[in-house]
Length: 147
Length: 414
Image (cartoon, helix red, strand yellow):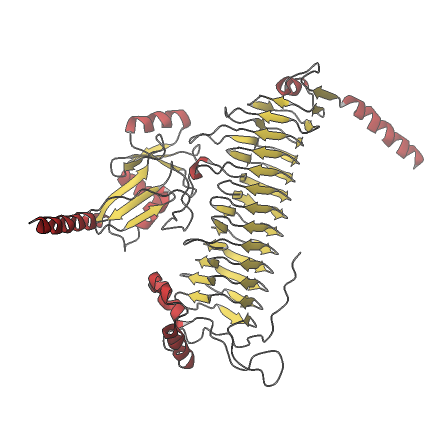
């Protein structure tokens, strides 16, 4: 009986671990951008997505991730997670689809698009009032970067 | 003639007497640097004597000289930028700057230069800084003989050693940079000359170019960085007589070329890197007379590279000489030395009589499935490599060096 129980638990453990699709923590300083090959070091501008199969993609800048997603080979509907670093809260990731994006010449981003993301719309608008620029939502920012 | 000379001497004295010197030291009349700077008029020299000054947010808005004597230290106490300069023709010399503030949203620097021309920053020592020397929208400056030391405690909590943004016509020489994010970083910088610098043990790159054109770097040494040098989205960059060494790691390389055009790469040494040169989307690049010694891959060329010419390079004892993904696209290999070449030279003209194929079949397999690297040095791999060499099926037919050299070409360094 006990034997069966342990087998079941091992099976369950394998089943659960192998099938969970979770975003992996970005290892700053060691990971490499999947679009531009640059080392990921900036905690306030990084981005990542995870496919439904659990494959991890990490980026050193939000603009890199958007350029990768705009590749026809990548289907946004097949991505389980799309995350962007929260500029106002470095080291934390926010859901790209609900995040607010600010393009402002006052805030440099790693790949030259002057693009930062905020999890909180109010903070984004407040920052925009302070430094200028324009705010976008996820659909708008994709069009803006593709331009 | 004599009259003119006397006139010249007099004018020198006349104007010389106007430029005064302000001494700052703990026991002087002026005890703070801020007060010294405030008193100084155009052309004056502020002489900072030995001692530690706990000051930050110092602002220089007039053309003056800041000179340190007996190694004075300015301690920013982690509160922000230490020195901010916005004026033409200034110089900062012989001062130690320590403890710059850290921030995710503001670029604090030991020395921040904004919209200034004709400046000189020399013989300074910067330690525990966020950004070391940060230059914005400035031209005709010289940055020399400085040492910038980062903390390297937490990777994302450090800025770049010398960071230049939107500037031109700069000379950066004889600096020593370590423990920073990037040793040297250039974004939108044209006509810069970078030489005799030593950049090592930085978290990301020893040297990093972004969106910069017409720059030249030579005689630099990039050792044990996260990756050696990255040149990205730039045109007309000349790189010569540099050493790229000991950049080991899964995603590491001596030199990364990404979206760059019309570059010259000659007489450099690439020694013991995971990948010597990683080229992606780079076009019209001439690689001449470089040495590739004991790298994992000497050269890895992936998609969208056109007209890359390799002439008279020395490929010695690399695990793989070349990985080439995609079509040849006008790229050419000629008159290189390959240590793996096993051909013969019957007419004794120094050139092998049989062409050399630098891409091994196994290198293709590793490119597709990295895990197969475990089979390196196995008999099976030797066999497939040999069979591919005898009758090529997978490797591009025209990817060969028709004139492989029998002896190593000389590379003149230093």
